Length: 278
Image 1 (cartoon, one colour):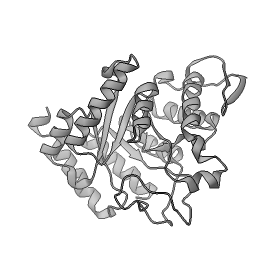
Image 2 (cartoon, rainbow, N blue to C red):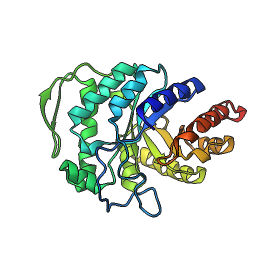
Image 3 (cartoon, rainbow, N blue to C red):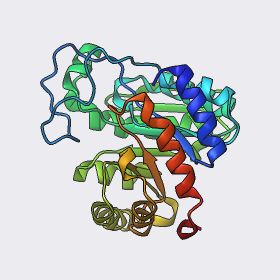
């Protein structure tokens, strides 16, 4: 979906009562990829190598200028690829422009080749992420921030203006491994799951609740977002997902042709009016 089409779609989704709009993100798409995509059985990349990639913060800024209530999320932003100061500034600016509507959907990335192109050791992405998140939250809320980590080092700095959401700006983590789920429970405000059924959602929610309890966190403050394909948008499936513990259903498909999305939006509007969901 191209930027002008996304803006139109977001406006229609907002009018239909949808909660949020999400955009995917990659810095580059390597010409040759040996890394296995974790959400397909065959490990093949989800899109062709000549896919159009847009900066998510600029793109969502355009969406923000044409909407008023719909939340703006990344699905997901490869956090360890970026300097946290650059990320903090981009996210804060969008949160200000949108009036506090940003959800930072973050992930570690799966393409070693993308990290190689950026000159970053793929093996360090988890540790980098763990250092980046507290720095982001400090920049968004504290008068002065400093850091003395292995990967993030900052002398004392000021960061203004602060985003309206402050340190509470939601950071939700993707990923399915135990490490990913534990990271979400330990330092995240939520989890974003990809291609889940009600049964698999229930199982992951149970694990997350256990991890949250282990880290002394309240599951009521932790939001579960589950991505489903367009064909999964039915009254019963959506109801079953909510009953399984999902707080939000995100409909997406990297390969769905543009012509299906008006139909998906109409189906979403119908589902949102279902008596079973009220």
